[in-house]
Length: 194
Length: 201
Length: 212
Image (tube, rainbow over all chains, first blue to last red):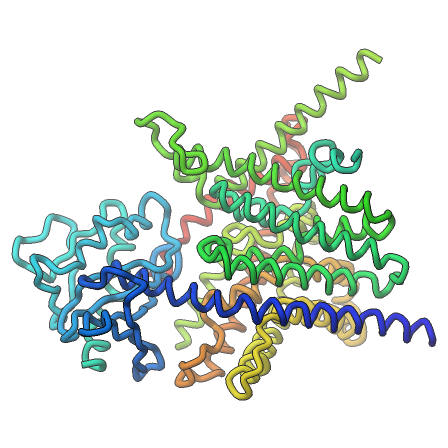
């Protein structure tokens, strides 16, 4: 009986000591972690929305969407630069998470960034490459329109047709997946934040 | 000291005892991840061996594993929190493999086999040796995979320009294949050394 | 909705197989894959424990930790891993007692594997990946029904268990044949098993894209 009490006391003391040490460290590191997460989003926004130059100076506020998700309202402190939101969908190897940027009037697509993917290295994960992401940027200052869905084509798209996106060679499924995620979400988010 | 060296080569936890191989395969796609993982596991191993060795007088058979688990889980959580706060990118890359250190067999095996029976200093030496042996094995695998998959070593270009990257080495099959071959080669070297020893007494 | 749940199951078994894609549960995978019937017993035990553990940790994580945080501002996030490992250890104990009492036949078949399962990283891994996959409740998304998320997590647990069973049984079948072949001396045992696993993993890569 005494032995049993001794044992339980040992376990209890250990649990209390470790628990309080953990709580102390958690209280000190968690704000840093949350700061890191926010900065990661800001850096992604910086590459997505034109005009967002310095991630540290961006002001990002969250807007609720009807499906429970969030959209980010991005400004540089004085003027509205655009909108961004995180969208998720199925790719070739698993889920793809994108950050999609819309212009200030929420009428056009201005850029995307790939936050997470498990596509095949060397093929599908070329969706991380600048050459692919640049296809969703403004063309000569004009954002991509949202009124009709984008289509993936295998050949060089016709000049002046903003709806056609050329697939990555050897990664048609991943290319289509990215475009599908954008088509499914962009116009809906744009309608809600407008 | 003898225990320290013991862990690095003669009883290397990964190559010889084949313990703790889940992270060995998962994080060795590049060297930075492998080193971080190795040091994180070394830290946990060091601290858990220290505490187990100090507490060994109070430990009783049926509660032993419970106490080990509390200690290990606490230190793994500490490592996880530090990585999230100070090495955010790395913690994103390693993801759930950091908390999986809790069930890494090396740590609980060393607590059981060594720390709960030895004095403080030998168990600390043992922890450092095993931890560094683990890190070393991870680095060997990661070097092979990173050089063949990207043509780089710690992000420095080492292969010639026209080298075609072996994409498969970055994926799951490459991990299994590299590890299988390294284990085989390690056995081969060990056998040769032993044969030489026994032929010249 | 049913289609989406089936997709989660299929993905966990074939595409993101816990062993051949996430490298989880390799110790029993290398250790208990000598004979097909042993492998099957281990696989069944893992599937069973994994299903129970995945749903229990989901409940603890979402109905206790999340609720305390959202409702009372008490953040117990730092105890998450400790709680997980104890829930798993407790589950294994419960399953063992339950089987011994009510299903002695099953207990005779795979009771010996149960104590090994506590430190099987596939179980803890499955519980941790539920968060990565987004089957946990997220602050600000109260619109999504908890029961739907729970169903996803449950199916993910079952799928992971079945995936493990499939991988270990395939490997055991191959290793039974391998006994008759002439493997170089230094590669016998672990070495050749890992190389076979590499070929299996390559075969499983062919399944990726099913979900797309």
